[in-house]
Amino acid sequence: MSLKSVELQIALPKTFDAGKMADNAQQLVHGNQAMAQMATERQVRKNRLTVLHLEETDSIDDEHPHKNREGSLEKEQHSKEQKQRTQELPAQHPFKGNFFDFSG
Image (cartoon, rainbow, N blue to C red):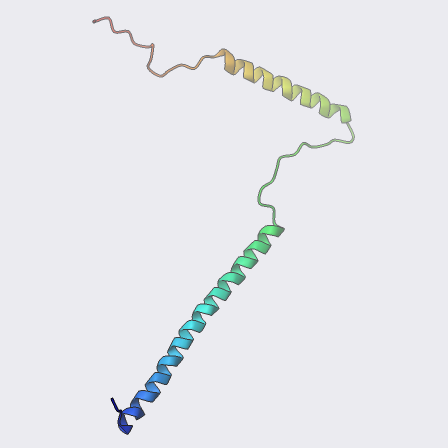
C-alpha cells in the first residue's frame, strides 16, 4: 500500500497530534498520582503531630496528698455499693411470669 504525497501531507500531522494527546493524558495521570501522594504524606505528618485519642488520667494534688487517698477509697466503696445493688435486683422479663392462663 503506497501513499501519495497529498495523503502524507494530511496523515503525518495527525499522527503527531495523536501522539501529543496521548503524552498529555499520560502526564495528567502522573500529575494526579503525585498530588494524591503529597496529600497522603501531609495527612500522615498531621496524624503524627496530633493526638488522636486522649486517655483519662488521675490528677495529683501536691498540697493535700492524703485527700486523694481518701477520695479514691470513697470511690471504691461507692463502686462496690453499686455492684451490690445491681446484683441484688434480679432482671425482670417484660412479659414472662406476668400473665397466668387458667383456661387450659
